[in-house]
Image (cartoon, rainbow, N blue to C red; front, side):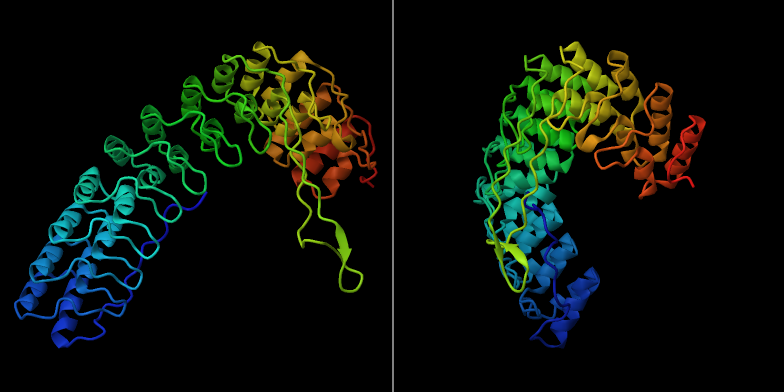
Length: 454
């Protein structure tokens, strides 16, 4: 997603580039917010529009200091409100960045161009939408700013308000005709910007205003998936209830049932299942594109003809149960089972629900799975046993209880993987020290001598 907000334009100099002593003293007084000195100096008729080094004037300094009294005094003394700096930032765009509606009002009253934009094409309305108030937005629109004006990235004022989580400005702009389903050049509707802000009321305001619950990003990411990714599960459930597309697949081949399972949230799983989805369906990642042919370059070095690296392999196709087990959520697993999910399903690479639960490090999830299917002999990708999966979780606080539980349930401790490496070998080649000590003792307690224990 394109970053919606950058750093504000910084005033480059405190002193005029071409001015006398009087103007220098005025600039210093404005910079220091010395209202008494400003009033005294203005009585001596200085050149209030003398340019600073960055081509702005002392009016911009007053705006930057958010001193409404100084702004009014300078305007009354003839300061021009439309002189921009080298970045095209006018006092009005700067005022909108700083957010003071009183200063915005003063500048507009003095004739500031309500549609003024910086050189990057971002208008005052967008800046105010992200940083000021509905009052400021209303004044700009009444003075001619266009609600649907977009910056070069295609972001409208509503998107700027959404990105900052400004629910008040969202509501105001919608009431003034802003399109809640406009899409930026990057493919982002306002609701995606609101989700990124992590202000729940912002995304809800857009949904209530008619945001499309079936909206997706260019890579297929749904509103629900975006909500889950930003920890806004209640909003994800609201979108499901409003008619989210249950069949849409994202770039990883996940449908909403897979996203819900991966979230580990049982309520979201139940909400999706209530819509009648296939609870055992595999995700369907797209096939990896064919790699560019290899060619020989300087010396014996081999490179791809187009200079690219090999594309990463596509994600593994998985049923919802494996997603929920990887998330370590006993509650989500139970919700899936109650909805008709099978326990003996596998991912395309052979990962079973039990293996995935072992890797999650969540003991409650592991216990729930083994209650339904006590078989711990499954072998996953690369010949890994359930103990290999448990050891892969390098957090001793979760791995050690998991390993102890599996050992007590009869899991074999020394099953080698396809390369001949036992779980103990895994630990000794970079595992967490506490886990290594525990596992060696576990082997001794079971009468097993590790080849690394000599």
